[in-house]
Figure 1 (cartoon, rainbow, N blue to C red):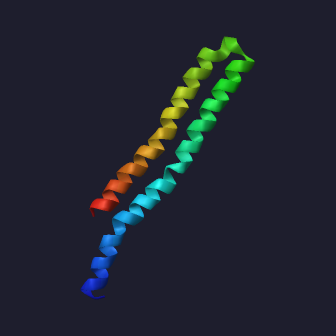
Figure 2: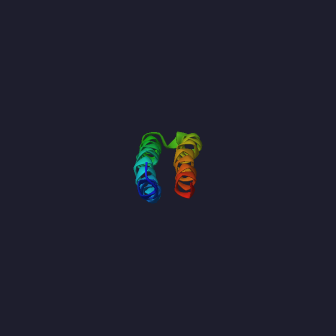
Figure 3: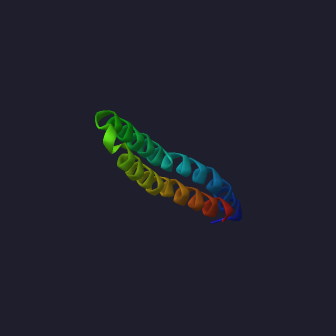
Amino acid sequence: MSDAILAQAANLNPGLAAIGYGLGAIGPGIGVGLIFAAVINGSARQPEASGKLQTIGYSTFVLTEVLALIGIVIYFIASLS
């Protein structure tokens, strides 16, 4: 391959990484919405269980957000290389 093609591919990598992270962030965004919708729905149906539901909701929220954090780390690795 010529140097011009390699330079063009190197310039394309950060843009593709940004698009990939944007698409990868959709999943955790939907997941967080579903988690808290379920917590609100459960609390409305059974108010005495709202404390336990909130604990479960926040712990699953953290696990879901880890996916977005992994995605942004991979984005930075791909854009810097």
